[in-house]
Image (tube, rainbow, N blue to C red; front, side):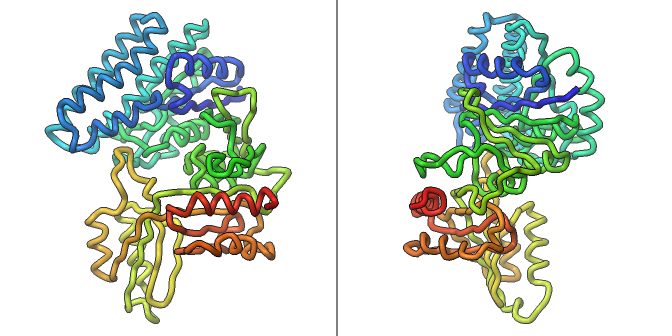
Length: 451
């Protein structure tokens, strides 16, 4: 059977009407047998607030009440079936217990279990919406198959174990019913709940598609595909019909919010095509991401990633010496820090870190322990308030005239870093966040609008 895995984001399952539209999308495709859902819009943010150390008893009660209102509003529209009501009551009760537990003792494992409950609620409700339409469906606990390590907040999937468990416990169910499961969460070897980090629902869908050898992953969100840039920044931005895996990986990595960066990895490994479309307007089509595309222009898109950190490291030990970079990167690895861009001189190294890559609870990357360890062998300076602008396309490193066109636009702006040449698919610049929107707008006009 040709299997399609569909993933619906938070706005797509925000309420009963939204879930109804998504159920119609699922049932219109007989190959769509596995559905992955995020928490209903707003729920994860409320759960994150419940994990914060600063929240008081009144704040906890208020947020628990808000979450319950979102879920019960959907349940009421379903006519409050007894089995779904009982499941929802149990999950909401667990939320209260875990939020109280965090008030007395901080635990990342407890945080992850609390954060997972939003997806558990939405999967129970969404499967009920499908059943309401006369199709057999049930909610499946993804923690039975999505095995991870125990790095709570940003757990690492164990791909081979996921494949084995999915084939044993999940695949046999798909022939008889539509299975609805949770994105963003998994479990370690001890059965403890883990999360994959913010935006991990796309990743979950791709991992399950890889494990089950699906033919396609559909990512349903609130926009009709991937655009040449954010239309809010450049009103003349337009949707892209198809892009390659390489281009999509660059776009996701450098800020295209409709796609989580990790989604591309499992798709590339198994050559699984990915579709991105709007659950509100499915008739508008969307963007297909494929291994090979017919059209591969030099300029495909301009991506923006805000809230960037520039880490400047200075040490005379670098001068005509070996080992400094190795020691630096070993330190970053120990703290599970991924570096995006890097430039070097004889005695300086500058690295960009993506602060949006924080863990599920919103905690940042640059801990005091990391900074202290780096300071033992170099002088450290941290710059915030920066944004990364990436020009995405093809043959960028080998096409004459690219830099001239880009730098004409950048002339009025202070550029903190430039990276070009490592990939044929991007040219990246780091600018002040306050100037980023204008940089993106000007680049789009120059490269895509003929201005």
